[in-house]
Image (cartoon, rainbow, N blue to C red; front, side):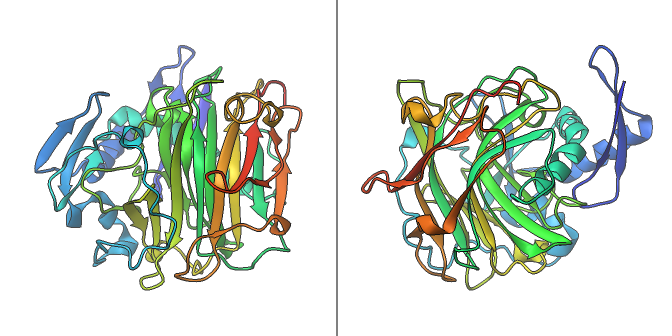
Length: 393
């Protein structure tokens, strides 16, 4: 039997979930009632219900009554409908096939994926281990972790000291995992705050069955306001992220690339609104929503930026990262990120990153590598390749 303690994203609830030898979840009656209470918070009644081709069910909820506004720090929060003067270079148009036709909620409502009890059980069964280790291993000087491996570029001491946004075009793959407990992720994130209140916001694509219930590649977000101690969750599994688009939401399934075949990509950006202080998510040229500044302490600017890949596994062997191939195989075979940019002025444009301000974090180079950062100009801009097959790492 495996016993794990889980804590809710914004409260002090501790759940004890037991997994028997057949892999069946077992919870007490009290815990079951608490899950029902959480489901009532997350599954707000909508004016319309939509079922997608993938079988997902969405409630179209009044934008001013969405679950994130139940967060105690967002009491009386006024929803910001639009980013004030979006920064340049988030206007690149994305192929409609990348994001699909959208959910289709009426104007004035936002799509909230209907959460099942099994979703909470799966997520909470791994969240305490996952989020704490995620936060601890998010910094290159953090204590070595036995369950995470990274292959990233990050801003070093020679780079700027404050940042207000990050951007990259992602090459999207669907790595095959050997265990449903594993995850493989490509992401960008901003980090800042104080040591005891380390804040970070991440966005990217991931294959993570405990969260999504399948082995497909999903758009994901993650945030924490205290280094993962008591806050931190994926997408909308806890109150925090405010959705503003009636047809788009978090967690959607993404089309993926084929090794030496057709390539799929998506542009993702995080940018701080200089007027309100909220951190906004852009997917291509689309404003998905934002993380309100009230969620964070001392996060007026980011101190660190990261681009690259992470994998998680509670045991050996570790899963593939990216395409599962090393950078030396080149684009079309190895996973890449292109057009790496950041904002170094509050409210300024996205600018190309500077090579001299970047360092490499590759803690298991026998399994995962980071290729050189090269400015190829034009469509590619600043580009690097990363990833690998995993294995005994």
